[in-house]
Length: 145
Image 1 (cartoon, rainbow, N blue to C red):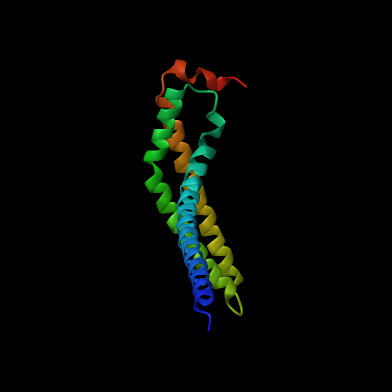
Image 2 (tube, rainbow, N blue to C red):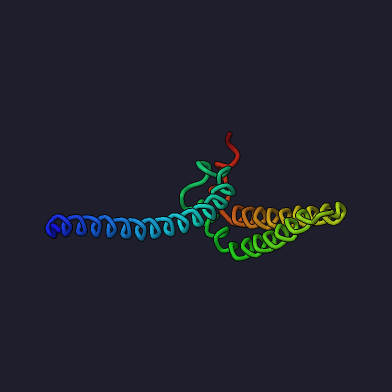
């Protein structure tokens, strides 16, 4: 038996195994970081969507004021989102049944639409309250194209 050749082979296998294990853990950490970023990006996207129509029409200070009001209302939005998740979970269970009850499915869809409407109405009210709290000269830019 030639130990030096076998030793090099085993060292090579050990190195490859070590690299593979490190790559696995680095990949897991990167995936975790990506998921966290994706979640915060989603929340920021909701906020950006509500503010998009104001972009370029308000001063940075006024925009920050409106954004702060929307951010303060985030807990209420999160409650609506949690409620929507529960409603959709129930809807999935209803539609997975062998004989789905169409009336119950339609009722659940109505509950989902109502919850979405409540969330949109609260968000719009918060935005309007923040805008109307700005001085008139800060709101002048809203009248332009």
